[in-house]
Length: 564
Image (cartoon, rainbow, N blue to C red):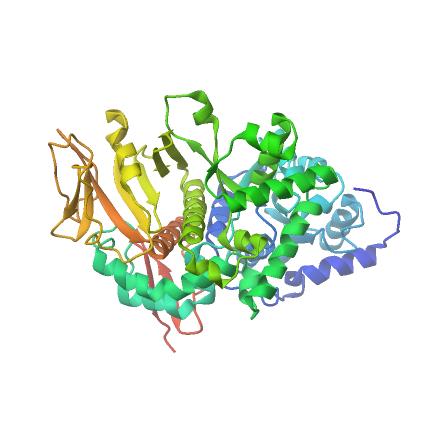
C-alpha cells in the first residue's frame, strides 16, 4: 500500500485513537451486541493458552461480524478480566487517519501518552491489511513478552499468503456466517427461549431422548418459518438485523460480494483473474456439492490447471466456499482428488444468484440449499471440535454426502436427501470395509419432512435397513443381511460384537442444523465458562430481552426467568 505523505500531528492521532477506545474515558462501545457467538469463546480460549510468540487472526467473509467479535473481546478483557484500560488498544486501520499513517506513528503516541501498566497489553487490530508492512510490524511486536495480539482482515488472499508463510507466528480462527442456532439466539430470542425451556430443557444433542421422533417433530414445527428467513438473508448479522425487504437485503449482500472480489482480491489478482473468480463462484453456486474437476473448470475459464487451483484456494481462503475431500482411502486417484465444493452460506448463494422467496417452493433448489447449509454447519463443527469433515464416494451411484470423524476416530454418517430417494447412499455404506464400519457411531438422514419412518419403508434391495417398531424410526444394521438387529433410542453407542449396530435417525433439516449448531455453541461456551465462571452467553449475566438468563452447564444450557 502506498504510504500517505500528509503529515499528522500527535494530537490528531491521539484524538483518533481516543474516539475508538472508549475504555480510556471509562466508557464502552455503543450498541455492541450482548450475545456472543461461538467463535468468541474459541478466541478467548486461544487467548488464555497462547504465549507472546504467536498472534491470533480472526478470518472470515466480509460482514460476518469479525469487528464486533474483536470489540466484544475488548469488553471481556476490561469488564471481566479487569485489564487496565490503557493496556487495551483497539486500532481500526480501515478508518482515516489511522489508515494513512505509519505503524510507529500511532504506536508511539499511545505508548507516550498512556505509559502502559504492568501485565499483558492487548492489541486489537481491525482490518490489518490496510496497515503498511503489517506482517513485519507484528513480527517485531511478538518479541515483547507483554504483548498479546488479535487481528482481523478482509483481504483474504493477501493475508492468507502471510499466514501460510508464518505459521509459527499466527493462529488462524475462522468466523463463519451465522449458524442457525445463533440466528435464533440473536434475532428470534423468544422462540429460542421457548424451545429451550419447554422442549430441550438443557439436554445436549445426543443425550438420551433428544432424538426421539416426538421431540424432533415438536422442534420442527417451531422452526419452519424461521428457517425460511434464515436461508434467504440470515447469515450476515448486520443485514439480518435491519428491517429490509428481501430485494434490498440481497442488494446489500451483492455489494459485499463485489467488495470481497474486486477490492479485497486486487492485490493478488489481475482484473481478468477476478472476473474468472466471479465466474467460478457462480458455477459453484449453481452446482453446490459438485465434484470439482479442475480440468473441466480450466477449459471453461480458459486458464491452466495451476491457475484454476489458485482460484479455488483463493475462494476457500476468502470463505466464499467450503471444500470437502473424499474420505475413501483406496480407489482411483482422479476420483479421490476431486473436492466436493459448496457456497459457504445459503443466503450468500441465494443473493448472488438473485433467488427470491419462490426458491423455497422448488424442491430441487431447496435440496441444493439445504445440503450446502449442512456442509457449512458440519465444517464449522469440525473445525471447532478438532474433527474432520469429508464425503465418501466410490462411483457415480455410490456416495455418502458427509462423513464426520471426531477426535475419538469414530464416524458420523450424514446424508442430506430433501425428499429424494435414499437407496444409493445406503448401498454405498454397506460396501464400506469392515474396519471402517466398526467406527460408525451414528447415522443421520437429513430430510424435509417430519421425523418419522412410516412413509419410508425399507427397500427390498436393502435387507439390513429396517424400521424400529418401538421408536417409529429407521435403524441400520451394518452387519451381514442375515444378522439384523434393531436398536432402541438409548443405544447410541457403537456395539461391536459379531455384528455392528448403528442407529439411523431421520431428522428434518431445520432441526438438524439447529441442534448441531446449538451443540457447538454449548461446548464453546462451557470450555471458557469452566475457566471463567463469570463469562456467560452475554456480557456479564446473560439476558434475553430482559426476561431470560442463559447458563452453560455440564449437560447443556438453561434459560430461566430473570429475577426482578
